[in-house]
Length: 491
Length: 99
Image (cartoon, rainbow over all chains, first blue to last red; front, side, top):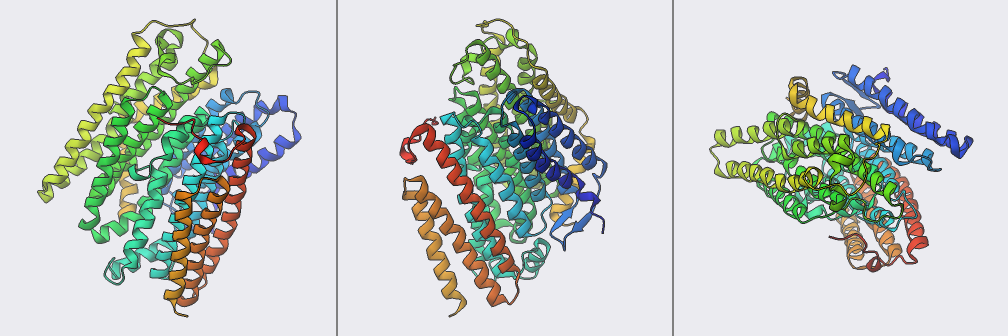
């Protein structure tokens, strides 16, 4: 058995541990090189995942599996961490705790990747916890800043509550099926349909949906997300919104979808209601926000609602659409948060003691003050609203189209109704994105033009290229997403 | 004792933990309630493992105990850092971020 397919995880784990050692041995002044080292490690892993995009295999007695689903989500996690690490080279420049910061980013990435290829409830739980615990610390990384600590505390309490719910649900699933291996669990439910044998099934299902729902920030479980994204250091918000949120989706794709296929109609409606409430709530509350980070947080809740539509019809195409939207959202949202970080840098270079650096007023005349950032933010906002040609458009198109097909096939009016609500929601979201664009390009600037630091520019431009690239040339990504969906459905 | 006794006890512990998280205002008490919830799941796992006659559940419980310990350490670290800056760990006073 060769472990070479696990090389990305192995590289990142070793690098994370080595970075802690390097941090012990180097002087504070020379710690700036650690960021470049982490970026190099992430690029190596990314190249490796891209090279083995069609890799297949199971490891450690079926505890980990490499398949198209795991590979496309690993791609998402690695790209997001790479963008975040590149931007952090500027954000945490001359910080004397940089070594711990980068080690935690790498370890949280490993956690997310383990979740993506988990084939056993134990691995799933351990991966979830590795990623969550690293990000609790990252959210509170500015330990002199009360807002950052508050964000960390709220994230920690809700995060561990969700872990407890998830573990309780997993224990019930283990009790019902007698196994923690996901294929074995699914095989059990195929021969013994859900709800047929005992009422324990429904309790287990509810606990799992709640546990994953907290990570995905679906609406009844979303309260932590806006506070945490607003208070955390902006680059960390980028990792949370773009990376760690997708962890809930990949876990749901692995565990929930097959169970949903087994029960079909009953839960379909529940997920539809959850998705519709999530997207409507996210979009409506985002309108009234003046803090851009908070606005992006609510828009990311709305996007989670769109992705959750994939669970409603669970056809191959709808799941492929969910995966594509997850990929697009990762690119757009990480880029948008990094652009907000540049605005924060700009405001702080005007006035060292500025508060609320992400306030809407600070975006006035950004097109003149920081042209590259403003243009990129413009692209990300249009992409988030679903304007072609962008990754956001492709994801939404495939997803909504798949639901329409299913609605016609089942001759069901309520599925069609859901698609209409989703499209109206996209239209609604244009309002609050356009407001920021108006501030950036129409209102007069309040300060001098600034020089945008190179790492930020590189990270933002990579995200722009990704966002537009997936929009212009979507075929390989759609093919990858379709392969991933066929794994999800086991066909 | 039958399996249902264990399940009932673990469900009661779980609900006590959940009730505590909702009602308590002190950060430390909330951490204790989270531990209760995690441990009720462990009790479930071990009970099922014993009644199903396979060891996977006990292995899972050992993993989750180790993880719960790490989680508690991180929780206390965040609380200590917060106490240094704000001089309080009462959640009612921790309200900078709101909409």
